[in-house]
Image (cartoon, rainbow, N blue to C red):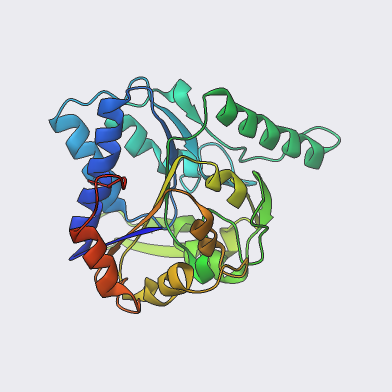
Length: 286
């Protein structure tokens, strides 16, 4: 596992965004795995800026969503497919090349069977394009990657998962209902409702095994609040209780951190030393 410690979140975002854009420049039909949860949005904003400024074409890129909420409508702004649209449209990925996961229960007599079949088709689609070249990841509560909650199988494939209550609380802000009333500025008022009550109980997510099949996985984490779980995932034991620790098994995994997220790493100085003295046979993220 390669650990890169940046001085700030903007530097981390720039590093990852630059790597993605350079991959697409060298391989125009690259296959990307895109996350919407736990990824610092500055990373995607920087990708859009670089792609537009340097005229890097993403027209042939294929993108696979990392997860999707189950049981919400297509037009719900909380869906992963809608939340990622600003990125895919901003860098020019064609809608037909974005592979999404189901967000509604099938209407047939055996919805669970139909969902399992959709998940299997998604897995086959990844194989059909030759696999994912670069999977972008964030890290969620208790070390979640994608929506693989603690105790998820390290060999799991794309499937339906039940969300823990702590995850539902973290994502609740995506599902707030805001009502605005009043005819002018003096009478203007608003109310906020929903939150956790609106969060679905289930999601469809790529499995840990699916993620480990990617050629390169980049996890980006920033901020003091992620320092403890980052240290457990990188330097702690491999454990299904910390799903992100499965990246220790990946043959080409890179973790990009800012100083705050790296503050609890015991080997921090060593990671910096490795980066400074990187040999040509190692694969850099730069």
